[in-house]
Length: 604
Image (cartoon, rainbow, N blue to C red; front, side):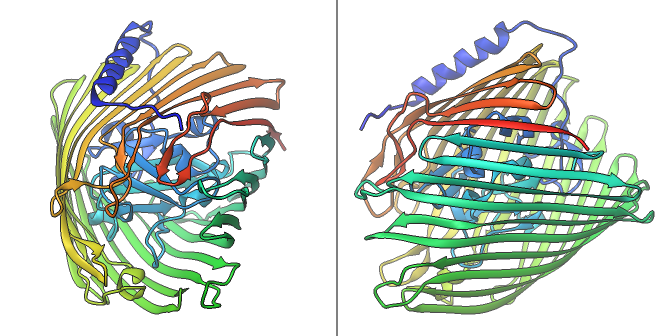
């Protein structure tokens, strides 16, 4: 295999090059980075610039210009998120935010938790970017607002709503590895009513997902997204539904396949949207199913099913123009039914929670504090909190600091699967950070954050059963630069971290010590071009072996051209240099992947 080794010196050099590039770009005083409204960091609508917690935003423009076939591909183009994939299209992925375990990442679709109640890893590989409006990644603990899992951070995938006014869109694409895609959508509004629907299909013949396999392993995914709403005056009501369904082939001592279904439905009623007090009442439903199509050696067809229903109420009250008080309560019921190699799981859990958040701004100071109490059937009551502080030195400089606690309730596989332990305690963490933000010009932003996260009661398999025996300490530095000048836009991100298992005195597996990402885009209106560079350092593959995964570098390209008023042609290339690399030992990543897509859209 051809490998590239990246070390801290090379990434630091890359950072200097990117900084020089941003400084060398022509300055245009009228060019500004558009304000983006985010909701995940505080559960209230604020601009990304005003959010004290570090947030990464992947916009619709970013999505369209990235050669990604799922959300995991999109995340991997950013330096502050580690992504490990077991092979090719549709294979399971793990995401690591700030060096925490993959099970310490909370994943939401339109604010609804999709982490299953079995293995805890959300199926990001099943989310088609065609249905995504933007992705908000909050780095750092957020259990104070969302409860379990958000030790490293949270990922909120926000689906596309119908465009204002009547409009239709359609696209079709094809690429190597037998890849083909298609999408059609329509949306509109009439009086107080609005709605739209979108359907997409992606399919690939694939390639051998493990080094020892000789046959290709394919994947297909049919996704559906629908929104409907009505303005009733005092209330505004929305019904959202997203689902993905398909089949993935893989290899495990032979060629196998499994069917999957992921579904999220939410009915939301909002009130008081134009007054000092506002809120929402929401009913949610999540369904995750994995069904094996081939019998195991016991003659069983394994499966893993999670059904989760919930009700939540949130109320925001502006105490004064510079103070916002947020209150919330929630109830959730989770049902899990699974069978894995003769071990059956059939569990039901109820979770009740309440939280309060106070957002205060006084002169150059801003303080956001949140506290949550979560009552879980199996683990009793847990209290978590966050405190974020910002101080504006001037119109260009801002200092930030934050501290928080978080926890993760063991999933049902930890407790009742093979080697399960019903007496497991939740994993807990304490995190601190400090940062600086600098805006030398309207079109340029610099950000840097140092952080430390200490995790206790890490759950491991000790050879006979699952136990809370380990501790971890993760320290790091995140740096990012965004710059816009005329038709040019660039973004550079750097991450240095030391994710260590303190109990074993070793680095946590599959987390790089250094990562870098750079994007350069040029948009002249009718045509646009983009280049991305991703560099990842070496990582240890597993706590159970000494194998090390070599560092790698990727070059991705995208070019789009508007053929006419409604037609758009786009070509994307992932891994242009066709580098061989792995993010999990024995599972080769995709080589060069080329897609050509023709799309059209217009008014009804």
